Length: 426
Image (cartoon, rainbow, N blue to C red):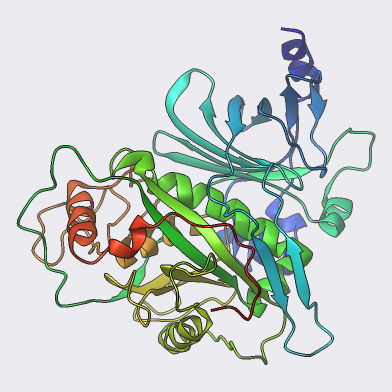
């Protein structure tokens, strides 16, 4: 094919040291303040080929095609991805609402573009997982075996400061490996529902019908302070990957569908939703807030079954500042309990978000509450380490999910509607 030749000469990689990045840039991309704690990373220029065009260097323009291939050279190898368009995680008519709390901060709403999201695999590796968000540069989640890689475009000013001053075509992106094995990425606090014991009965062989996790996702002002105008794009890229993780065959496959039905970004921390580093305090107030914000009627297209708050704070819980998320076990479908909090300081928050949603769907940590699954190796292990955990769910997690769907999960049975009701209609 003609574009394969172009891949060889266009897939460029540039070495950048963490010491060249400011503390603000380190926090923005890796959630750390010192170069020593930054993961291994490189500056890359992805090359994209579609059915309509020959290979070209990716820019920050949106790419909306049925399928495409992407090539990146990094860490001494080529990553050749093939993906197809898939925006099933975005509800029809979804808008992102910006709330500046009456200040000079950004306020308003804008329609979410849904034609620039993709899923696929690495070429030659059908077991790999790739999600791409190409609405403003290439955001990629790549899982291969026990390795995770992330790609995201540099913010405009960072691109000026970090990219080499030469005639390289395309937008510079940063590609980095997931957390090192010794770094905790999933230390989790959880508020357990005593009724959610380990299920005695296994799930039926035929499995359930399609279930829809209608989701509200909120970015707080601390996240906006870090990610600025790219906050909504970053959130949707994360939720694209999370929806794929929840649809893995080790649960019930693509019958479990996460759909974002309501999306808010707070640009000021003085409004009706105030967040802080204290994980329990923030979750308590968020749970009350999302209950007030949730339309009463399940027929309302903005009615949500779970609500996830993504924060830019380094939250503190029972694990100190190692806490990455907190939720209530079995809280989905219960208006006052269907809430979780996740620290979004790096792309590893994909795992933390899926983990906390797992709790909301009735899952306990592996090896706890009487279940016999090992405490490490799967997504619901209590101290998930990226290079130890498989991209999959344990048998215990699957049994918990089936038990939840059969007892408390009836709200997941309705398919999301078109999000066109006036805001005052409840």
